[in-house]
Amino acid sequence: MPQQYVEITKQDFEKFFKVRYRAYRPKEFIQERSEIVYDIPLSTNVVVRIYSSIAKGSNIGRGSGEDAIRALMFSVTVNRPINKKAGNSIVKRTNGWKDNLSDRIDSFVEEYHSHQDFYETIAEGKQLPPKQQPVKPAITDLRESRYDEAGNYFPSLEDAKKYNAALQALVDQHGQSLGGYGGFLLSLAQWIVNKKTWSKKQKENADNALKKFRITI
Image (cartoon, rainbow, N blue to C red; front, side):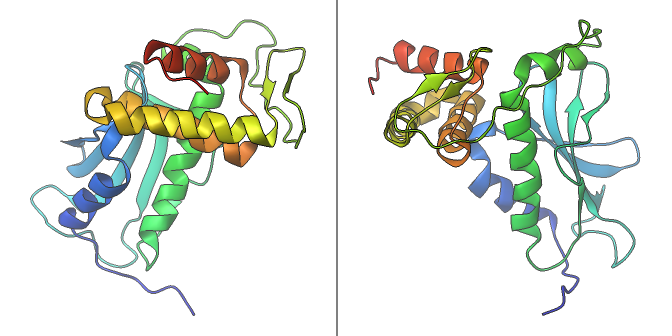
């Protein structure tokens, strides 16, 4: 079935963020060209920025073919996009736009948390040390958990499920007080079962969170 243009309202966007990204506390503002923009904070420097295609003072998006929804990983410190490889930024305003936009947002969230130090360096406008590049651990399925030489964590299926359940329980118990941090922990929980690996930084973040809230696995 061919994709058909759908009219998207400001209320549609507000409901989308409330249902799917509430823990991140998205922020709404008007961009210079009078377009309504939403930021999903990942840190003080980095956001996922969504250009809604809805003009200031209007309740609906621009007409068919005039503009599209765009999502970018963006540095609010240096005021520019910082990643163009985590997925196509364009989301067409067709049926299924919510799932397509979620895919774009989630790809940026996962990419950021997988290589947090790398993107924070770029977001702060600093130069990367020579040869510093994001390392993407290989996906594997092990009977016993292990680490590679870089400190990346490869869990067994059983350990991946334990970490996922523990992080989910943490957010369920303390969700109201966690704010955007809760969304970050949920992304870690999803990452470990989907990708079957964590970077060294992701593993440290998960362990520190569980230790802080006294949740055992």
